Image (tube, rainbow over all chains, first blue to last red; front, side):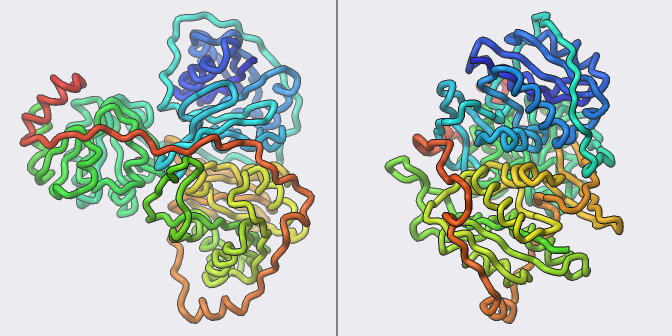
Length: 311
Length: 251
């Protein structure tokens, strides 16, 4: 068995999710290789080649891959994979992997296994369905397994090695029916939501966007990422990409602090793999208390300044 | 332009999911079913484009049991023009199979835009749109939060990606999958629900397609997610900080 990991990066840094995907690959086989496609990959390779568990890195540096257009990526990966003997092709289950990997599976006539959270054997995996309200154990009968990996379920691999890198060229036609226009990166000095050790989120109880300042002070002291419930996002308190839950981001930090969030099942689906959950809510009947290790009943506008002071 | 909107019948968003005691799946008997909410957003977007005269005809396609006709009807009540049901007795089809059937329908109907939800809230696969685009060799824009039609037969689509928003330009014919914030679907009015009853739904048997519908993935079992152990309520901020420091050892 031989596993290929598709590396997600931004032509400067390797995404943490890639290192988690490498760990997942290692659980399937000792023979793990990585493929990186991009433009100007020197920094990415410097970082990636330290990855434990990797036997080899293949690099395709080409302007076709400057932006992650799934049309070009999936074709190139298919060409590369069909010339080799990989039994598994893994990508992180980020928007990058979700966009690209099903195209690869269609090109190779394979039924992809999406968003795995556990590896039972080389052909059997666990994956959440119904927003994590049920867990399915599925066995793939395809000769090649194409998989996306939920990165919060696998620790990132350690970075103590020095892996061989091979340069490859690729011969595919540029897809002219799609072009990249721009990428509008959300500006934030805080850690990314999906990889932060501590996350503090606000819900409808925050009442408006201004009041999220009360969470900022705490986030600063804890080095935490900031998130929100769908209700807070829909109400326009904070940007879309802060949304944690079934249809937003799935997080699994060491500590998740839910403030003014009632705890709808769709929100719980996005946080329940957190090591510890704490909540502050004035309604002691709110469902969030059933999922919290530590619940504090009271008015968040009184409690948050106190909490910031005590930290 | 002609739009093909693909819709799936799923357990309603607000229903509490119960895993069957024999672990074969989740309980669907006597459970409220609805259109997959992301597909509803797709129908709404097509209807809005029709209202702006960017689209002339909207076809609502579903693949499923006879009951999926109800789902198609609700799409017709929102503003779809006609429906197609590809009928099967199988409860669940895999995304690759569904993608192949949508491709076959598209080959015949020749839509300019295929629009559907980014994922179904039952199997949470997030694959079908990407598969359809690939099989048809159409460009794709997944996770759309804004869609703008240009005069030169292209669409400019803003996509919700990790860490921000990405904009791509795709030429028609194309596939778009919808994210939550693209629009807020309308409620169908009673007159429109009545009118939808007169609209035509073509029913095609799945066997009439040259597609192998055998599953590639075998579901061995379905389980409840592990429960979190019950927590405690603390009295005040001091107690909370103390627990986080000394019990959880996080701070």
